[in-house]
Image (cartoon, rainbow, N blue to C red; front, top):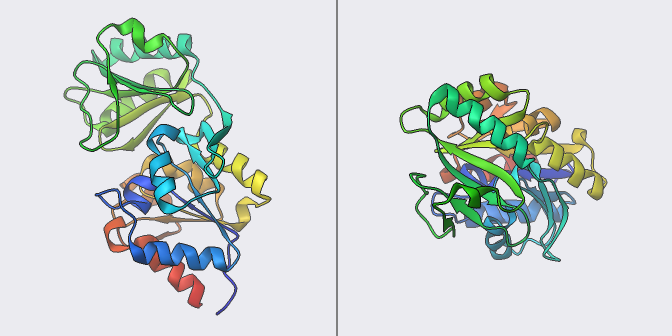
Length: 268
């Protein structure tokens, strides 16, 4: 077997490492195990905040560093502690939200609170994804701003995710960052925050450089990560914006797209 050509394998979770049922296939687990046995590190880089990520990492037996919350949180899974955490300026976020709503009309909102046990608040009309992830409903808008946040989630009653993202970015692009992270998931983040910023912090802790990194993803929020890494691989199910900047496109998350690439590199 030839040496594996990268020292770091960065994988998104939803739509990438995870299948639709939130499981990781045996084939993909084996490929990642082979990569780590060959001397590379595997790092999860996800839009999910730590409370929505921890159970998946525990199931994988993952004990290293993970990047969560679109780069806001660097989390040590083995020690169950936050190494870094960046919060959203709530006053600035409120201003951005008011400007977006003045442009497109009322929005349904949710938010991730900061911290290892940070709750996800969900407001009236927000469409929750089916599944086991916990959230706390709220009625009083003041609850949304009562504690530090890592991000806000936006939904519009008629605009598509792409349309909402474009409109919000055009309206408040100089105040905050707007990303589309998945179906029904448009987010307000601190300006300048991305998966690339979180990944670069984590890689520095691991002593690994961008030139030694291969990254896998499926959505536009993975674009900065692809820009940072030496090689970006879009899943077969990836959004067109990510496919356009990818170095290669593999099969879908349901077809072991990560394993397909890693097995090829391991046997090259």
